[in-house]
Each structure stands twice: as C-alpha cells, then as structure tokens.
Length: 258
Image 1 (cartoon, rainbow, N blue to C red):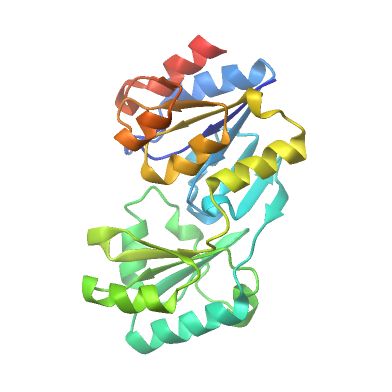
Image 2 (image 1 turned 180 degrees about the vertical axis):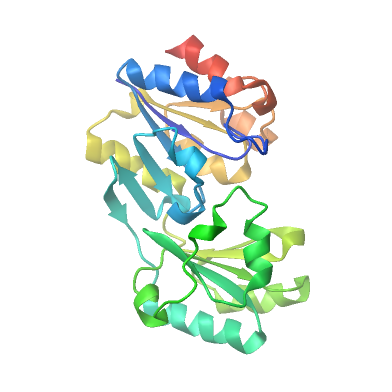
C-alpha cells in the first residue's frame, strides 16, 4: 500500500471555476480503489478547503502547513498556537485597523465588517458562506492553528515581522494578506506524523506539488513528483516530473505509477 500526498492549487486544481476536473478526480479514485491512501497536503486550514475538493473523497488531510492532520474524519494531530500570544496579535491588528481571520481544526472565524477578506477569499476557491461571523474570541483563540491578516501595505511588514518573531510569518506579496502559523510545524512534519501513526514506511510515500511551500513535503517523502508547472526549487527535489496541471499531469502520472 502506498500513500500519496497532493497539494491543491497548481497541482490538482488550476483555477478553473468548474473545479477539479473529472479526469483528475477519477484517477484519484482509481488509485484509492487499488488499496492506496490519498491525502491532501495544503497550507490551507480545513475551512479553506472547498466542498468540491472535500467531495472527491480523500482519505485524509495534512492542513495549515502541518498543524492539523485528519484521517478518516478524525484528528491524528493538532498543534495549536499559543492563545495568549495570539490575543496580543489580535489586539495589535485591531489597533492598526487590520482585518484578520482565525482558523481552527473545525472552521474559520471572520468578524462582521471584515469585507475585504470576505471578498478576497471569495476569489480563492473557498466557501466563504461557511465562515463563522459571530463568535467568542477567547474561546476561538484556544483552538487556533493559523491566522491570516490583511495589513494594507508593504510598509507594515517590518513591524509585523517584529511582532510575530518566533512564529512563521508569510508575506503573500501584492494581496497584502499575510499568514501567521507555528514555526515548528510544516507539511513535512505533518506527513511524518501521518506515516508514523498509520505505520507506513517512508519508502511507500509519494507526493505531488508545484510551489515553494511544498519543499518540506518533498523532503519528507521517498517519491516526490513535481508538476510540469512547478518552480525550479521543487523540480530540483523531485524524483520525477509529470505534465502541467492544465494538462491533468497528476492524473496521467497516477495511472502510470499505480
């Protein structure tokens, strides 16, 4: 039995508004029907995985850059952010007039009035109608695995980097939406926890990916397959390269391998 980890954007999904194409879905199903396990491995938290991706029927998920691992709808591991520290961050964001969203293992929380982020996520293949808009902040921060913040301009980045020192802060460029997560978890640590929990040898592990945040995933598995559209850093780590996401490269390679 093999276990295969898939990134989403740029790997099985190319931005087509119709969603993941049937050819890719069918190849994943065929791979599972042969006794293999298929997992999503994403920087996205659970609430950012769209219904059309969930409906494919993956065996599990490595989420929020490794902070949350699910298998058969049950948590294998969760690494929370420190609630008191996150409260400090939220107070800073409120003082500066920043919008933010809080991700937990079971949902995402966005305050009423944070319209920029609501509209922004609506363009990112995220089911924004599932966002929880009224909530108890203190209780939600106890379950937080990731925070994303809209910081309005690049001049804010140095102060945000100072504020989040000791944590992983990712500046996403021209969107001015940054991510705050734990620095001691990655897609790679989540994958290793999955292999250990399911007693699967690393020799039977595979992944498909394309972007810089897939580096740790490629280092954690034995067989890393880079998409044809992958960045050079991922191609250099890969044991194989498949076709472009727009050509359903993952589907073709799955059928070749399994």
